[in-house]
Image (cartoon, rainbow, N blue to C red; front, side, top):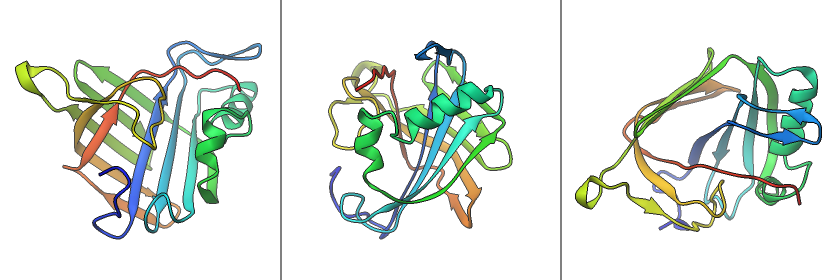
Length: 178
């Protein structure tokens, strides 16, 4: 399932992180948001991706530098492994971003670029459905809650996606240096 060819011939994903608490050396990253838009023109494990990185516009210059180093893979660790799949960086830009977590819903807005909302699917006994250790996870060691998008639009870098009613995931995360 996770490593199957894409049913539409391509894969698109918008991944977002809200940092409750975090540091990169002496730079505090608390409360900041980051997002990564990925377009894979085929099987994600077989072709190089196009990607755009978005940084919270409330971040200082030092925070933007730290976020870029971490989420581009320059700092090593998990993102260096994911970054090996990126063949073309479409851009890195600062943008107004809002993130909300309310019960089993997650919302992200990147000003004039993207809006996404996902809602957890209910399993037996109304418990969350989770997936552990999937091959392209962005939060190693944490289960991903299986969700469905109630809204997902993206427009930037000559890409336009309208992917409401598709799958989504959310989870806590913790990253440490290499």
